[in-house]
Image (tube, rainbow, N blue to C red; front, side):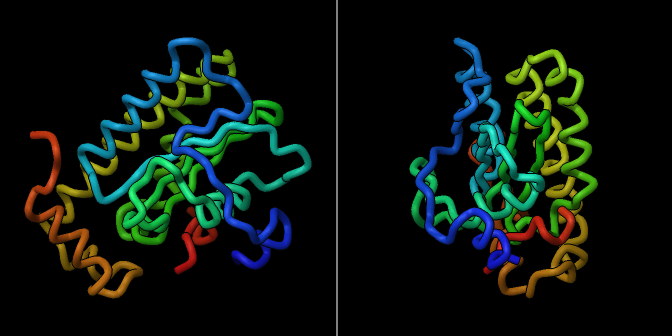
Length: 196
């Protein structure tokens, strides 16, 4: 899977920031609102990070494949080195082709599903059609935060269910221990998985 994406986009790592607006779709004053929405998720769930990339992908027909590749190949400048890309959630927006996609790392496989990413993106659709990209992004992230909160409550009630999903218990265990202990700073189709 990654080999196919590498053949299309290159096998070299790329340096980006968590909020990379290459398309220039965020207006003056939008960036702080979007960063605040990203930070809310990171504060609540310090074991994950959110990244957003906007840009014209040109001939790229599959935005999911590009997102998968970018999440795997990015060296995020503003993410701690010990945080693996497998704990990332990447929103990609191509305003030229009017396409958007969301991918997440394999560490989130027990907690997120393809239907969740579709729900998140659907919250932004009307805003993006009107060119209100920041409003749409904030809606996506608010819905994502709600889904993650719901799944963390479910994991506290039934941790065995989440341990049985996709990952070996040793890898899921760390995330579940944090969820069980309430570790918070405050009170995909399968192609969307990040390769180990």
